[in-house]
Structure formats: structure tokens, C-alpha cells
Image (cartoon, rainbow over all chains, first blue to last red; front, side):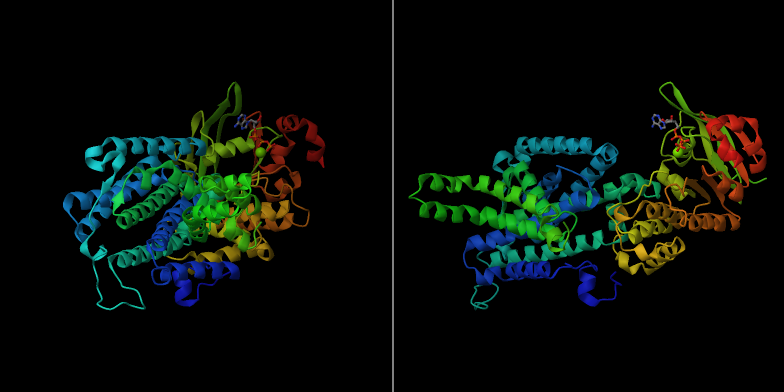
Amino acid sequence: MSGGRGGVLAALLSDDGPRSRVLAVLLLAIAAGLAATPFVFPGSQPIGAAAKICVFIMLAASYDILLGYTGVVSFAHTMFFGIGGYGVAIALDRLGPGWGQVALGVVAALGLSCVLALAIGLISLRVRAIFFAMITLAVASAFLVLASQLSTLTGGEDGISFQLPGELRPAFRPFAEPVLGLAINGRVLAYYMILAVTVLVFLGLLRVVNSPFGRVLQAIRENEFRAEALGYRVVAYRTAASVISACAATVAGAMLALWLRYNGPDTTLSFSIMIDVLLMVVIGGMGTLYGAVVGATLLVLAQTYLQAVMAKASAAAAGAPIVAAILHPDRWLLWLGVLFVLSVYFFPTGVVGRLRGGR
Amino acid sequence: MAAPALETRDLTVRFGGHVAVDGVSCAFEAGTLTAIVGPNGAGKTTWFNLISGQLPATSGRVLLGGRDISGLPASSRTRLGLGRAFQLTNLFPGLSVRENVRLAVQARAGAGADLLRRWTHRRDLIDEAEDILEQVRLSGRAGTLAAELPDGDQRKLEVALLIALRPRVFMFDEPTAGMSVDEVPTVLSLIQDLRRQGDRAILLVEHKMDVVRSLADRVVVLHNGALVADGPPAEVMESAVVREAYLGLEAALDE
Ligand SMILES: Nc1ncnc2c1ncn2[C@@H]1O[C@H](COP(=O)(O)OP(=O)(O)OP(=O)(O)O)[C@@H](O)[C@H]1O
Ligand SMILES: [Mg+2]
């Protein structure tokens, strides 16, 4: 058992390191890749993919608090993601581009998310898990409809495009000379801001799950009846976990909106995002948090580059029409599905569980 | 006179037409060990469920130290000092033995709301869990998952969780069932230690009559959900009702 002596790194990781050399190397590679992307991979696609990875690390990690640690299945997670996006988008769109507006949008969104998560938790976490999942599905659907209908506020299906504060715009050049060969501009700064927020949120969540509170969440997942019998108010703990998870998802949504300079139903609220997050957590390994990092990275990379790889493969197989058809880029979702089934079959405890030597 | 540590008044539960616990009134004083006996299906575990809040009563009341706790959820009753070990082992299967006990210690210490500190930095909780594992002779198994323990050790862990709660009222439901002969004395001597401390009330559901005879200050007999006898062990075990209740077990009583 870790004695909690080990210095700054142990404190940052809350005494919950990777516990596997391969996993440690993998995580370091992901961290180094994210840190170096703007310098190493030119063009807008790599930095866009990296920003998306960051956002989804936050989103998947916050979902893992519910699914993996507390054993709660919720389908309302993208609602909180969307609230974060809309908070920033509406504030900047209505009140003009400025940091005060960013802060206001984020704080207002966090407030709304807390209230909603509390309400859902207190009303429905008493009921059986399957009913809770259905209630969250209903609430999330209602929110999606609401966001699409209230077009004066949310821009409806079209969403909201908005201006960023000057420091985050492409035209902003803080340095006269390129740094390490890269001309730093507002986009690069925006990316590093998102990366920094991701690191903070991730380490914060890691602390939460390794706190006495976080250990109770795992106890609830293992045997809620016994947790209650030991004197833990299960509903209160579950509700608190929902609120924390919702807040982290809200921050992730705000960061995505800032990156895209846009928020709409398709970027933050759609159910396909909910499915993506579920896949990220399951493929990466539930109840490990590091699984969210691995899962988000794998899925975003697959979504970004699988089509391109398949286009090449399909062209190369032009001589064999059936193979070419199967490899056609339009089939990429099918292949993603196949990858998912294979990974769940071979790594039921996810990549992280597998690397840590579980079954 | 101080209120009894625990009291049930006319406690009743019906399942459809079946009355599983039938108007049971009984008080338990601190410093005493009461054995609860009765044939299979008599309602002993169900009575415990009503007391600890696992099951809502149809009617009747439960008082803890004179305070009516009838409407409270199980977690509140535990925090007020009512501790329960389960007949059917009821642990956190995917967590280590040490973590099972640590969670119980943490619950009693009221430390569960702390979400900023590392759990590894609450050495006090970890050390206390280790002490309790030592007491129940499970130290050697501290790192094993609870699910992977043999039955007898799971029963010991069940007892360890209860001890960790340091309640004012201990409720043991056949704590030694399924244990090998050489493990039983460890648990019984732990229960005896608790009794010697003098300020706790101990309720012990137990089928083994020799254990009842040697440990109990008092024996309560349940039959078809009703309390049919109550008194010192020697007296109760001689009585006709008990012989009738235990018809098939008379040999065991005489032994
Ligand atoms: N939730 C329930 N629903 C329906 N019937 C129940 C329920 N719980 C208990 N019973 C019934 O109540 C009666 C008493 O059961 P209980 O488990 O309390 O007996 P017991 O005295 O603990 O027996 P044992 O010595 O076998 O542990 C049994 O007939 C049982 O089937
Ligand atoms: Mg029983």
C-alpha cells in the first residue's frame, strides 16, 4: 500500500499512479503529444484533433466518476456538456467578446448544471438504476428539444457563432519572432489554455476519486446496501458525485465552444456524443480515470484519421471491388463498431485494466 | 431509570397474509448479552431488519436509547449507534479486505465528506483498520479481495466491519455459521470482550445451544414471529414452550 510519502508527483496524482510501466509510457506519450502538437504537427487538423482530445478527456473522465466509480448509468451527461457550451456562446454572443463574459458564461453554466444535477439526483437517485437511466434519458431529450426550440436564445438548430476575446483570435501575435519555428498566435494560446484546463480538471477529478469521499463512491458501486448500512447516506453521495461530474462536463463544454467559436446541438448535445463518451470510458477502462485519457485519445484519433486511412486503403484495393467497397470511407462507422466490439471482447476491463494486469 | 439501550414496541411486519414478526415488544439493557433463538423461519433476521431499518415495519416502534428511530433510514440508525452484522455475508466484494474495514472505520469517523485530501493521508483510519483485522485474525488477508475469501473468513470480515463501527448496540446474526471449528473461538472471544466493556448492548442470534449457554445473560425465544419466552438461559431452555418451539431440536437442547 502506498504510504502517501512520495513527493510532488504523488501529490499531483493523489497517490494513484498508472501502476503499470506500459500504461505510464502510454500516458506520457499522450501527454507529450498533446503538449507538442502545435510545434510538431503543422496545419489546423492536428491541433484541432488535439483540442478535441483534451475536451473529451475531461468529458469522459467526468463520466467515469458516475459510471466507473459510483456505478450510476446516466444519459444526461451531454446535457451538462451543452450547458457549458451554451453558457459561453450566449454570454459572448450577447455581451460581446471579453474575458469577463467568458467567466460569466462559465459561472452561469456551472450554476445551472449544479441545480439540474442536484434536482435529478435528489428526485431520482432513490429509484432503481434502470429507472434512473431512463429519467436521465428523458431529461436529456427534453433539454435537446428545448435548446432547438428556443432559437432566440440558443440559435436553434443553427447554434451560435461568436467572437472570441482578442487574445484568442488567430490574428493575435504575442511575439514578433517565431518560437521554436512556430509563429505563436491566438489559436495556439487557446489550445494551451484548453490543455491547461484539462490537466487541472483531470488532476482535480483524480483527487476526488482518491479522497475519503471517492472511496465511498466505490463502496456504493460495490454494494450500495452495505454502504447505507455502514452509515453512508447513499443518495447524498450519489447526488454529490453527479454534481461534481456535471460541473466537469460543463467546463469541457465551455472549452469546446471556445475552441470552435461556436456552439450548437450537434457539437455538444447530440446523443452520438453520449455514445462516444460511453465508448471512451468502456474502451479505456471504467473506474480508472486514466482509461478516459486513453479512450478519448483513441476514439478522437480514430474519428479524425480513420476515414483518411480508409480512403487510402480503398484506393489501393481498387482492383478488388468488394474489398474497396468494404474499405470505402463511408463505412468508417462500421469499422469503428468492429474495433469497439473487438476491444470489449479482448479487454473487458478496458485498456487500462488490461495493462494493470486485470482480466 | 435510564432508558434501555434498545427497545422494540409491538413491532410487526406482514408480507401479504404472512405475519413474519408479530407484535414483538422487548427491551435490551447496556452491558448485557441477549441470545435470540428460534427455529428456522421464526423471524429472527426479519426482526433485526426492522430494528436496523433494512425493512419498514407494518406497525410498532423502535427506540434507541429512548429515542424513537422508527422512521429513520438505515444509515441514520447506524450513525446513531446501532450496529449490525449480517447473516448472509454482505461485503464490498471487489474491494480488498483492508479497504472493507477501512470504509467502516471511515464511516464511523464521519470522514466520508472529505473530498480534497488523499485517503492515503488518513493514516489514523488505515491504522485502525489494521488493528481490527489483527483482532479478527485477518491481517494475513488484508490485501485479498473480499470476494476471494473463503466463507469462514468472510464471516470474520463481517464481524470486523461491525466492530469498526463501535456502536452502542451490536447485532450479530449467526456470526459463527459456516466457520470452521478452530475459527469459532476467535469470534466468540471478541464478542465476550465487547460484553465485558459493560456499556454496550449485544444481541446475538445463535443456533448453537452451548454457545448460548456460555455467553448469554438472557435468552429470548421467537416462534412464528412472536416472542414466546424470555429469561435467564437455564430457565428458558428448560421451559415447555421452548421445547415445543424446538420440537425437532429437543435432542440438541438436552445435549
Ligand atoms: N422480504 C420478505 N418477503 C416475504 N417473506 C419474507 C421476507 N423476509 C422474510 N420473510 C419470511 O419471514 C419468515 C421469517 O424469516 P427470517 O429470515 O426472519 O427467519 P430466521 O428466524 O432468521 O430464520 P433462520 O434461522 O433460518 O435464519 C420466513 O418465513 C421468511 O420466508
Ligand atoms: Mg435468520
